[in-house]
Image (cartoon, rainbow, N blue to C red; front, side):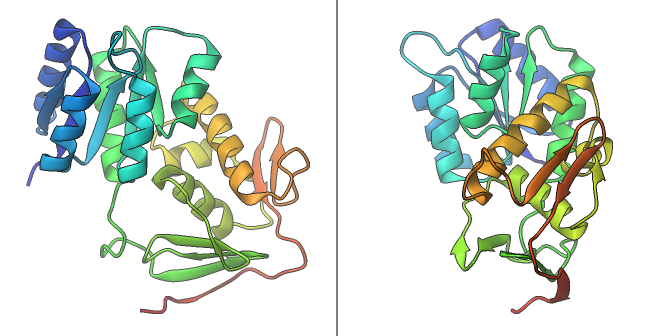
Amino acid sequence: MSHKILLVDDDPDILDLLVFLVERTGAMALAARDAAAALTLFESDRPDLAIVDVVLGPSSSGLDLVTELRRRSDIPIIVLTVRSSEDDKVRGLEAGADDYLVKPFGHRELGARIRAHLRRARPAGSPEADRVILRAGPLTMNVAVHAAEKEGRSLNLTATEFRLLHCLMDRARTVVPTGALLKTVWGYDDPGAREVLRVTLYRLRHKLEDDPSVPRLLHTVPGVGVMLKPEASERSTEPAVS
């Protein structure tokens, strides 16, 4: 069965182009020009991925739509913007997006991003999932059911944040190179992806740390990578509890 991809852009020419590019990948395109239509399609067709323009005209907000889609689902979300400032990218990611592309974007680049995110959007409990429980200090993760906790408190992680934390917990107390994180979590490594990693780490740190300004769990090693350093606790794996 082909994947379904929700496309939201108020520019009919861009929307037509997106439909063409998505259908060329073999996926089904669900096209909408505003947030209301997008949410209707989301509820009726349950897409596997969404691509949303952050500027949807005077009557809609792309960022608000991303926030609402993230509230309802963990599907991968890619935001499109004509602006190249860091603030616009950060706002899109902080609204809940997993990735971004700046217009005008390369057709092959868009296709590569779509394929990468769909490969990494396996449902919890799928045969490909690692059926283990990871523990690192105060953190516990059940990969099979896509759940993570800190000291018994559930962490509300997006799918991308979950994959990032999984990668770091799996190699706790080891510096994971930036390139390895990008390949594992996003499926590609380019200069733009490094900015996505930086913002996602920022969001994850705010969910994990008691004081994000003084991190005690997530440590960035400039020019090298990231390390999860649990305090006074041993990392372990064991079969997941069904």
